[in-house]
Image (tube, rainbow, N blue to C red):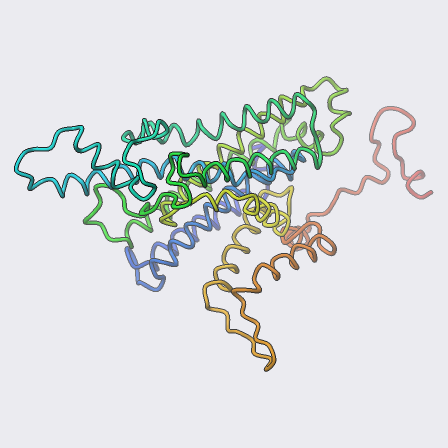
Length: 408
């Protein structure tokens, strides 16, 4: 109950998400009237996943004050982990089907070689790299979705926070980590097909008889459920004493350390937890996108993530969701050819080319004129204002703020 009292937006969010999920289901081509196309259902499902990683970014930046420019790398790693199983299992079915009419039954070695050739032939290889050791096991790869980004965040965070790296220097370090990982994955010998990435992820193994309209709505449900759980976890974290401590770290780290709290421990926990949340979002996102490549992990993607949270309103969980959903859907409109070009005669504005300029301008305007983002508008509508402390003692000593002091 305390979580609901301190987060009045929580029941509103739950109600909106449930209504939205039901509406999309009943309007989809799979279970409803067909008013919403399968491709748009996938877009909505991906938007929910982006909202999930935006919550992670809000927890680490908006509440803890760590401007991480590497959280989309964890998002991409989650996609790679589940993508390995999807690609392996799908390719195995294709290989077994092609070898079904062979004169002699194929051996396990022949099947493995054929799968390897199918997957890695594009990079001139047929051998399975070590990173694919568990690719045949769904549950092992699900565990790696959590473990790989979690361990990377734990090690990186431990090294950075114990050295008390803060501010812009920490942001640069997270960006450097992302760039290094991206450049490594671009190499063919990384074991993840280099620039080609992993493709065909939208085809669920063993579901050949199921059309994409059903698969898309299933992933949409999974994304909505994951977003709901993430929102509840985030609301629980920021509602209690833990939330007060991380806000204190954001506002005055030295004072929190002076009070005896392990600042590095709190930072490390939030950084690792949000990396895992981001990875789960990626594991749900890329099967809906159908492909993942190293460009998805480039540092610019993490910068976009910070822009989404800033536009939505950092320090508000619902603000992160609003920002991610708003930018995702508006981006789809402008870059998907739906927005009409504007012809001035001497020059034609093509929104596909100008969308990033518009996004950057929006970020600048929000920073200058609406630092609370879109979420701040909801605060005004709901009457949620900063508390008026005039005349209210802030402590037992005589120097505490009083009304007479406020008037001076």
